[in-house]
Amino acid sequence: MKHLSIPKKSMKSAFVLSLFALASACTTVSSQSVAPVAIENLALKAALSSQSEKNQMRFASRNPGPTLEFFGVQPGMTVVEALPGGGWYSKILLPYLGENGQLIGVDYSQKLWPNFGFMTPERIEAKKTWVSTWTAQANEWRTDASASVSAFQFDEMPDSMIETADAVLYIRAMHNLARFDDKGGFLGSALRDTYQILKPGGIVGIVQHQALEDRDDSWANGSNGYLKKSFVIAKMQDAGFEFVGESNINENPKDQATTGDFVWRLPPSLSGSKDDPEKRAAMQAIGESSRMTLKFRKPA
Image 1 (tube, rainbow, N blue to C red):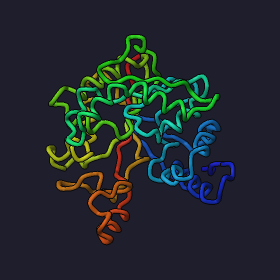
Image 2 (cartoon, rainbow, N blue to C red; image 1 turned 30 degrees about the vertical axis):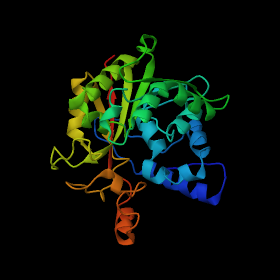
Image 3 (cartoon, one colour; image 1 turned 90 degrees about the vertical axis):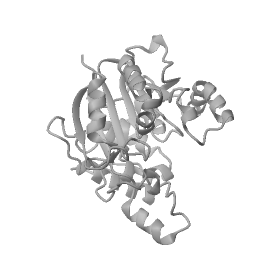
């Protein structure tokens, strides 16, 4: 396998991206999917090398290049990113999709937010303007050669977006939809919007904190960040999607989370260990969470 050829911004950046290339070379997938190869896509290389040094330092854990290649994301596509947050993936997608592409951000339903104990009435009210505020923020990340930007919230998808997207990405964005599904059908509603916005043959790519299959279902319900692969596949198939395959790109065998653990104990959050050097070191030794990487398709 060839290593990435990256413009020399710094020795640190080059080292990180070499790790990223190695991760790509070590990728394996199920027999249901086509194995990704070492990245040769010049547009993707350029988008990755344009990221901040801080973001590049997480490539070895998040594997954005191999992940996007596995999902089949290409320049010029219209891509929906669920729960884009501060834009870690958005900032890669915007230059990669290019001036002929479109990035559509989508946030949780307005009805979901009151289920979080940390959401004050003021923060819930502010979510009503999320579409305009996130779009304005994302436009600040763009250049003239970047994809265009738009947004919506689940349960409020404009009819004009129906069957316009080539791919929908759920990058660590599914657990709270599942966690609160019994309080408002949020996961089912989000998957209906996903099905509607995709063109026939469109792809859904999921990266999600993964609970081992023998773990307690009540623990692995999303409230601790983790979901079982069998649960995600069943929900996607129930929503009408075809399972294409999976990759081990984002798995971490050191993460053996079980009852009593939550994903935020691990880097980068390190919740519960910031003031305990011994526990912090143990969590850092595990690294970021183990994540399933699944690919689905809307029937053509």
